Amino acid sequence: MAVYILSNRKIIRHQGERVDSFSNDEYSIPNFRIAKCNFDNHKEPTAQAKKKKSYTNRNILDYQLFSEPEKQGYGEVLDVLLSEKGVKKSTLTADNLGGTQRMFYELYKNMSATKDRSDVLIFIHGYAYDFDDELKAILDLKKLFIDNPASPVEHILFVSWPASSSIVPLTYFDDKASSINSGTSLLRLFYFYTQFLKDIFSNRDLVPCNQRIHIMTHSMGNRVLQSMLYSLKRENILRVIDQVLLLNADVSYKVFEDSEDSFNKLPLLANRISIYLNRQDVILGISQFTKNILTPRLGKNGPSDIAHYKDIVSIIDCTFVKDDLQNSFKFEAGNHWGYLSSSQVQNDIFQNLYGVDRNLITNRTKDNENIFTIIS
Image 1 (cartoon, rainbow, N blue to C red):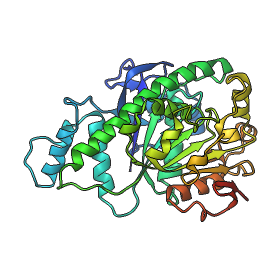
Image 2 (tube, one colour):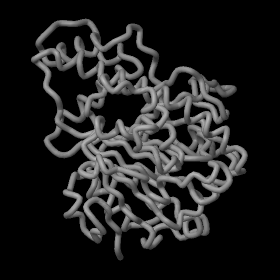
Image 3 (cartoon, rainbow, N blue to C red):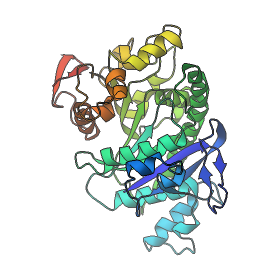
Image 4 (tube, rainbow, N blue to C red):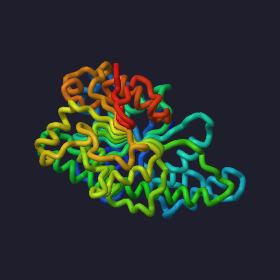
C-alpha cells in the first residue's frame, strides 16, 4: 500500500524544520514534485487536536518529498530492476532514484508482487482546497479505497493543485486559472509514464504487472483533466487507463464534442468512462448561473452528445441517492459530494473499478443503452 502526492505547489521550509514541505500558497509553479505519505505512526487526531492552530501540514499527515532525479529517463530504474532480478550487475539501488523514477519503481515492484488486485487510483480534487484540506482528503480516500475490502485500490496518486482556500465565488476564477496550469503537470506525468513503459518493457526480462490504473476527478478537478487533454496529441495517446470516473464534473456539457477537442480523447486513453451526475447539484447550479455564462455543467445536466462513444461512456444518475454516510448541511444541501456521502454511490464506484459489466452492476435501473439511475 502506498499513497503519493503529485503537486505543483510552492516548496517551503518552515522555521526550525529540516525538511521541505508543500505550501498552502494559492499559486502554482512550473514543475511538479512527488512526495510519499507515511502512515506508520499516524494516529487519528482528537476533536480537540483538530481545533489547535498546530493541526497543519505534517501534523495532519507526514510525508516525504522525493529528491529530483539526477538523470532524465528511466534507464537507471531498468538497471536497478535487472540488478535485483540477478540479470545484470549494477552499483545503483532504489535509493539512487528520484521523482517519478522512484514512484514508478515502487509501484511496479508492489503491483508485481501479488496476483490479487493491486490497482492505482489517480485522484484529482475540486474547488476550494488548500494543502491542509488535501491532506485531510487523502486520509478520507485511504479509508474509502485502500482500507476498504470492497475496493480493488491499493495505491493512490493524489494530484495536488493550488485551488483557493476560500469558497467566495470570485475565487472560482483563480481556481479556473490554477486548474489550467496544473493540467500541464498531469500531461507531463502521462508522458513520463509512457516513457517508463517503453524504457522498462523493451527489456524481455521484465514483464508488465497486469494491474490496473484508474482516474477519478471531482468537480473542478475535471478542468485539470480537461487542460491535460487539450494539449495531449492523439498520436501520442496509449490506452493505459482502465476506468475514468467523472464525479459531479464542473466542465461544460459539450466537452465530448469534437469542437471542444478534450474529453473526446478519453476513449483513446481508457477502457471505460463513467459520468456520475446529480440533477439537483446546487454547487454546479451556482457555477452555471454565476461563473460560466449559463453553460450547463456536465455533472448536473449530462453530456450534450456522446453518440460516437455509447459503447465506452456511461451516464450514472445519482439524483435519488441517500446521504447516509455524511449528513451535515454541506452534504445534504449541496448534492455535490456523493462519493463521500452516499454508500449507494460508493458501492457503484467499487463495482465500476472492479470492471463489472455496466449492465450487471447492482442497484441500478437501465434507462437506455448507456444511461443508468442508482436506486435505493
